[in-house]
Length: 75
Image (cartoon, rainbow, N blue to C red; front, side, top):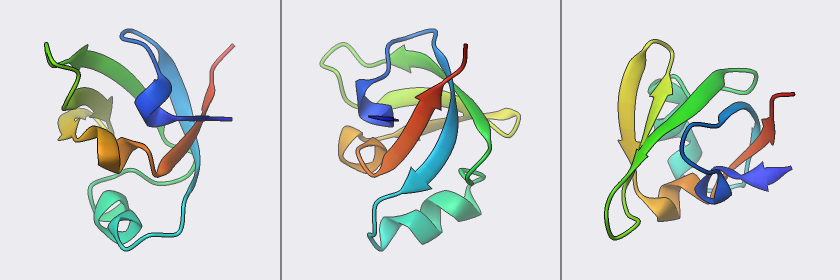
């Protein structure tokens, strides 16, 4: 498993779990739930934030938020 912050632009991944942190409740409310497919769409020029597609909409996450999401690449 990798952290979402390590995934390259254009890759599609599946959320597997969250690191224990208060932010995981906020992420789940925004559609980032285990089993959900997400795609990394863009990365800001300086690397932070990143833009992902999740549950049919675009979401921007800071890298420190994306570090708490563990994902698995789709084959």
